[in-house]
Length: 195
Image 1: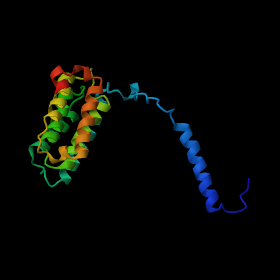
Image 2: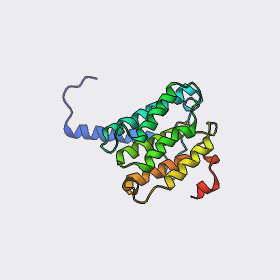
Image 3: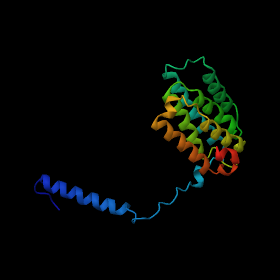
Image 4: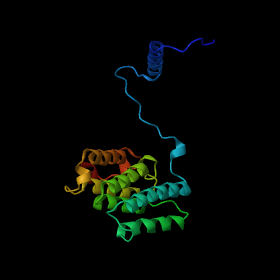
């Protein structure tokens, strides 16, 4: 079909709204229906040690970059050194990743951070580890790792300005919910769940 003239403004709007309605109808759920939970395919499970190390290394690089850009941290800080030593340990290892060893520096940074953006990136990394299955029921020291996550996030100081902000509170709650929903969630102690 050949177009003989440019569509008028009215035709363009009506065509766009008709297109939007057809697209919305394709993705609409009936009123009152429940969205099914997201199923993680077996391809995203962290069974391979190489894949685990890759994800952990990328999150370490993210945190180190933000720490370098932040005025609150120097390259000589103890937390910076902890991340560098974990990175070196991952480079020299071919084993599966120990979940507790991985989350400890990230949680230490969340608990002691003086900069909101650094704490946010560290907390997002912990959240990513939970979502992608790095911390699962089959992980090494999974019980200790999930209990450490809950104890750290529930025990944040009242004076942490980033944790009292709406975004900080939301991030903490998302990480706690991801911990409960993860495959290692059943490993939480009763005390951690009620905390």
